[in-house]
Length: 466
Image: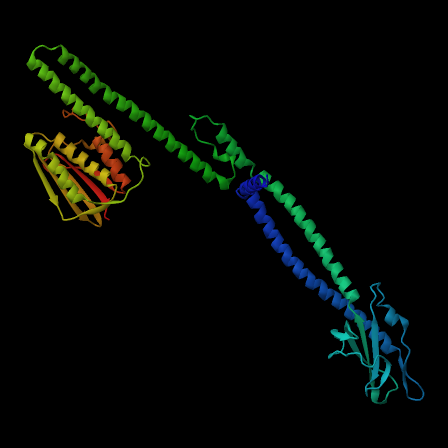
């Protein structure tokens, strides 16, 4: 039972700690409490100084009243009748004890306590100890008519701290009460302000929640404050990217279905023809066509899988060290037999070891598609040359062929999936260059198409060196 309560309490605290309203309120209150703590500290010492000042003025007034009561009689003796008002002015109801001392300039005690401590400077209050209690002491030198050579008397008055401390407490508590009311009112205003200020953000949350799964139209930025409008713009950009991605996926599925439908129909037809054919030669011809269609659909399925794996986020990022020169040599060796059948001059120009970092499997697929496209679209007795080298801190792969080339107006479109140039005789799915671009951009590089000297096409790929 206790563990359940602790768990629920911990969950509640965790949710509150993640609340923007609670965090803002905590920061505002923390700032207010810090300012109030400083003000209370300062007000304490201000109250203490005020209480001391009032006490000192009262002590000075009492000393002056006593001094003015000092007289010299006919025999030249100094006498004083202390007025009751001089002592009663300290009767504030806090039980203070008042002590006084009147002495002549030559040190004779006229009246009061002989051992009462005297401050170092007159008219300046000081804290001293007297008869086991802390007292506030004030001294006043006052001239008396009748003394030889205009002599003076010194009046010292001391009082305990009861009234002084009570005044300090009252002054400080008054400030404390005001500060507490200020914090309370500020907290209420802050809560109301936060509630009102966060209303547009909550309205944005509700607007997003109410939308259906397929609704991705942009949200109006005017529904929130200017500080939150970048968030709305970011949401709109994200939804636009999602829309584009969904549209691309729909096109991809539609095109893939269309591309697979024709080879599958051919396979079905050729299989039916081969099964009904009695003539061995014609049956072999149908079976050969069936094998060709099977290879085409197998190649298309392989390219679709490669394209899916090349898309961002489709697989865990890898950082393999790949030697492009070695990979190009191995791929050219694999295509050597096909090139010999068509009498195509297949060459490699490698500038030593060229290492790049990335997904090694996808980088090899990029080279496979570049070389396969070049051989596929190069006419009989043509030429295909692959060059691998380094330039300006980048790895550069160039595939040159003397085929029909690509018109300049279609060089951007050929990177789209399933796009094929009208009138192309060679069989293909239109996925090769799309795969190349996905792999190259995923590795942080670039790909470009240019005309070759004497006709043909030059594909140039730039990748960052390891």
